[in-house]
Picture 1 (cartoon, rainbow, N blue to C red):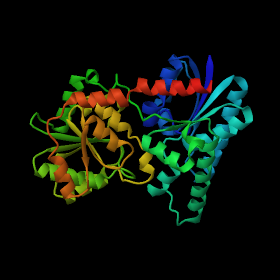
Picture 2: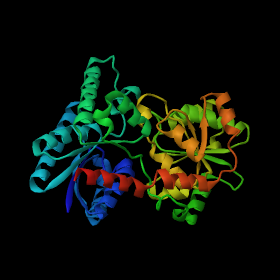
Picture 3: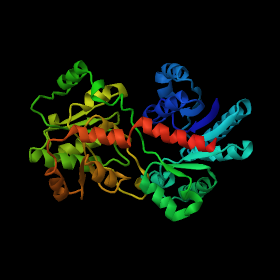
Picture 4: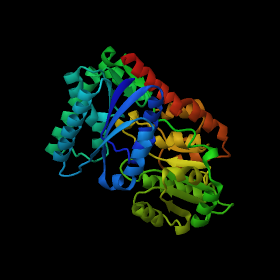
Length: 404
């Protein structure tokens, strides 16, 4: 058995842990790798889901070592968690014949680099995008503040060290890989693999739609057979441009393209609803519904098209929106803005939706002219070809085997 230690500062009880970590690790476990998983769990989420999830993870053959995530005080809490991750990882490496260290993003990478040096184990830096730049461009770190500038500079130096010293590097996008190739040349380019955020095509499929649940959602939300529904699924704020999405829906509603906007989110929708009211949109035209992962296929099937606008920036060149693969797997056409990750290339190759040239009325009206009856098979083909979980797992398996 080939033992792998997987380090994640994200929790498995978080949505990303459930959709973007555990499915990969479960499949890798089936392919002969014994996974030792360290994650940092938010207490409230862990209390609700931890026991049930622990049973599921154990049944898949994964050894799970959950730690408590600390949010405050800022900086000090993260340093404490890094120390805890390093201590837990060192103990596991001392007790087991660990052959590979797999680090999800930068915090885990810092720990992984230390473990690599101490135990002489090859390391994967699964970078998940340009994290430090995301913090700045997402307005989480203000570089006018000398403390945040110092933290940013520290992580950019660590980023370079991780890229140069890791034995393998994972980029979510081809565009991100090209940026790294331009910056570091052959020192990094020969060890980069591109693996996008993949989708469980069994869960996100028409076969997963529960018709009784779907009808209940229709009744609860007041959706009729005559409604033309546009959906949005995911977080609100930071990167996702809720004002612009509401503006797009206003134009779409005015010209008859869509009658209702279904926003599937667990976030506070107050700002979105206030902006919709300021645009004169009636209350019944904006529908907000939180949903768990198991409910998503039935809820997503209420709309033929789905929308998301992400604020363009340097860091988003390395972004692979999780929702994109899920929506395509459900046969949904996607309306999105240009310049995000590999979206421009994917839309051109697979004809899986409409790219908006400019986030203004002219851009919205031009895009809506292309919104017609959508061929579901094109979306599903794109999901199977590019976002398949099994293909993603196969790529990870090839990386693991190279290191072994």
